[in-house]
Picture 1 (tube, rainbow, N blue to C red):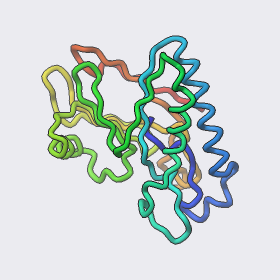
Picture 2 (cartoon, rainbow, N blue to C red):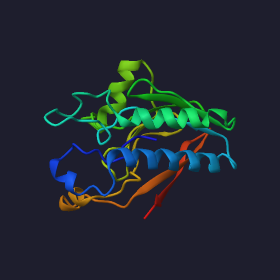
Picture 3 (cartoon, rainbow, N blue to C red):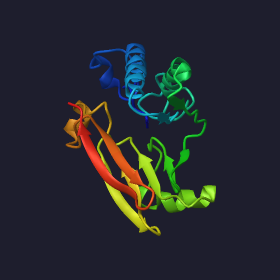
Picture 4 (cartoon, rainbow, N blue to C red):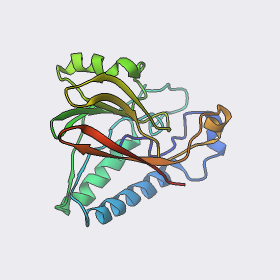
Length: 208
């Protein structure tokens, strides 16, 4: 899960009058929804759950402060803590705590890096640049942030493409995005990985 689960109240002053549900109530509703959904899903499969601890829409921004000025004051942390603590007794769900803004894990032998993506300036070179930082050869990078999904191949591995994958948002579009003609439906992405070929099939799911 890569963030922007809620619509923060201080991104743009004009949004204050448009919010139908306040930030606190959004957080409560989303936490409860995620716990119920993960519990139900765990009846069919075992789950390893990762969540980006930093985003931009969920930052608490007192009036007059700028983006990332209080980056650690982020409602994503509260959402994660609730999900982690409530699901701790479910043996079929492993909720992995992520302290850094980059989530690093493996699917089979493929190295994956994921983050919300609001501070990624150049997605095309991100895998190359971040591989230098961590001294890990990454096969796939996952972002969110833009609210719409895309896939870009930026290189070639031994048996797989090296892909930058931007996943859609369950929040969907809003008036601001529609005015800029960049809106998209609320969505999710389901990806099938195989040991021999890495990312093999992608399913785009429209939620509204």
